[in-house]
Amino acid sequence: MDTRKVGELIYHLRKGKELTQKQIVVQLNLPDRTFSKWERGHSCSDVALLSSLSAVFKVNIEIFSMVNCHRMNL
Image 1 (tube, rainbow, N blue to C red):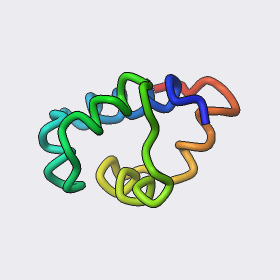
Image 2 (image 1 turned 120 degrees about the vertical axis):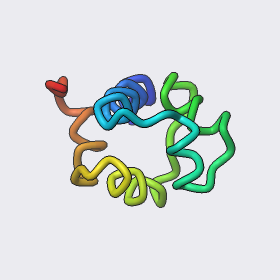
Image 3 (image 1 turned 135 degrees about the vertical axis):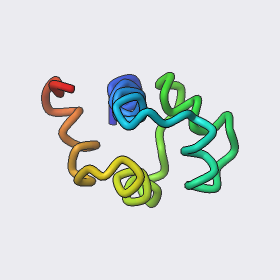
């Protein structure tokens, strides 16, 4: 998985829902720095958390794998 591209996707999804990083980490019960690292592309979400992320953003979980295949139009 390209962590930079996935990070950009997560950032755009979060901004599109007008959510703060703090709101996301509270919903997912994560440390603040973990989510920030995902958005900056410094690390990537555990596959087990992709389902929770997709639920928070109300998107299909497949969007996270699609970002690696082609550029997403967000």
